[in-house]
Image (cartoon, one colour):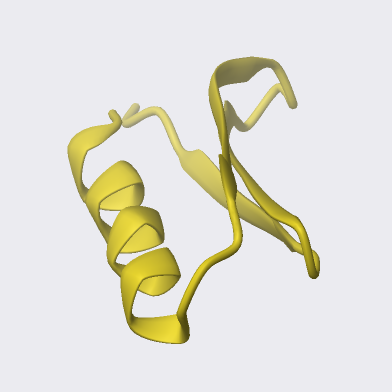
Length: 53
């Protein structure tokens, strides 16, 4: 059986929090960074989600 992963994003005016969890709802990885321009902020989100299990 293949393990399933879930991605999450909490988007706010001052910071973004992104996380990856498994199907047991355990948090595997979490990152937080300041909200800047949409292009810069979303680039960080994409890099995080692509490079985490």
